[in-house]
Amino acid sequence: AESNRYWFVRIYVYAFEGIPVWRGRADRKALRTSLQTLRDGRAIGIFPEGGINPQLATQRQRGETIEVSLAEDVRTNASRLSGQLTRPQPGSAFLAVTSGQPILPVALIGTHKIFANLQRRRRTPVVLKIGPVFGPMTVDEELDKVSRRRQLDECAEELMRRIAVLTPPENRGPYREETHDS
Image (cartoon, rainbow, N blue to C red):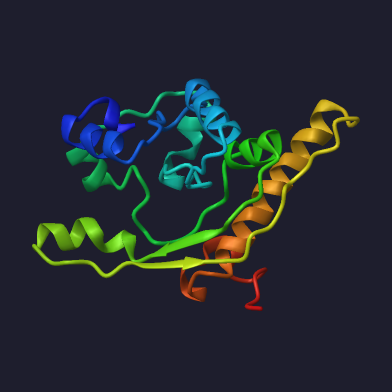
């Protein structure tokens, strides 16, 4: 979302062909752009958790747009800098199911230390772990709307479990007990 407000972030997003997403609300334009990117045979990277601090989940569920300055974001942890996995938003599963594309789970380990280290002018080692490809994911279109949504939510949970296996146990958050290394 910051790419829509801050020129220096916008440059970074543009350089890597990023798709800006407004945090704290369903961003239909970002979903359409992401689906078109997948249909064009290109890959996208997505953070299934949605990038919002779980403490702001109630505001998001009420449909409030969560907008903070970059300094406030860093200070109040609006973007979730704890290093713990959280429950996913349905957008990642929606994209996976709608596009019919396979999924490559990836874990970024150490990113939660970047802002603190930047303030101290230190580099942050970040580890990228890549899991095995799986999918495509499907949802039974014959089901009623509530049941389809339940299946979509389960697809998102499966995606997070596959990411959790790639992360250290102490960073698995709600997946700590239900995820076992294979």
